[in-house]
Image (cartoon, rainbow, N blue to C red; front, side, top):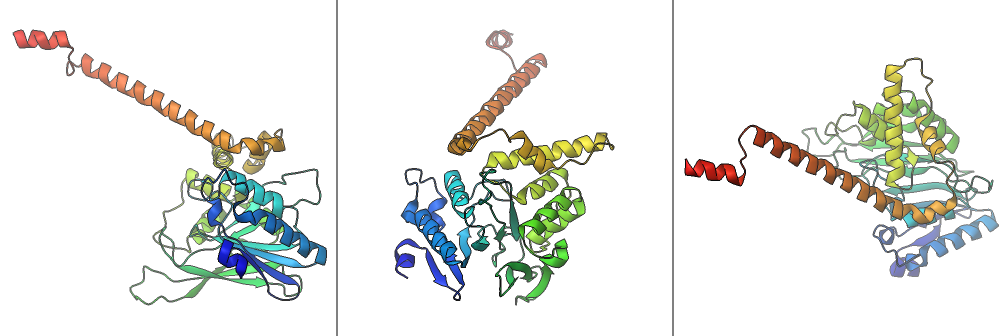
Length: 341
């Protein structure tokens, strides 16, 4: 308990074969760029997982804020370099980590790894991440909680059930009811990487499946915004992948919309995977790009701001020109002439 009291993270035995690791995710949210490892937590996590691997034991990892980009606008929930560091660590221990549980975004979601950070290393493999809903209805969601089913021998996570209460009901007392099970809603045999990857591939070709997933994200709340347009479909589909930066997420959204538009105009176009298209476009990048992720984000922001400024100036110039042509806006000489008359 000393580490929990002083640094906010802890590991404890669930049984002789399974350890629960709880992380302090708060230091990873702000830009503490002068601290490569706040509270030494990454070094500690690497050591604990290494010891479990040597002993042939397993772990669940839990924390509040997830190392992801969110489903609202693709905003990183940790500082980018911390997301990269976390992936570098957990990818080495796919044989140890049986599940990763996080929350914070008030939405029932999961993330499927995009690709290995080191495609040539067979020992490196990222695993899916599970994001829980919330009791608070702050973001238009119904209050919800989740019950997990797992194999007591292998500790693999098999399924989850979401229980929710409809806050639109007139009864002020919350009435918890089973809302859905992942296995039934998404046709899954388990929550393994293979099963979830297959689900993403089905969702890429099935708008109804995307809409069902979005509605379940919000615990089927009537207060959630409808997801019936192409933009929402694209964002929801791209949310299924475990991206590192907002730029990657937005590139996915843009690619999904572009391919969807192309299929509208050419019904014979083969249904290529939009997420695979994003990966193919960036396949020439090397691991050194990780050091430039934050810089890329800044450059994108500067570029977008510059473009918006140019458009705004052009609009103002056209408006002034139109007002002058209509005689509504006059120059100094014209005002002097009017005054003389």
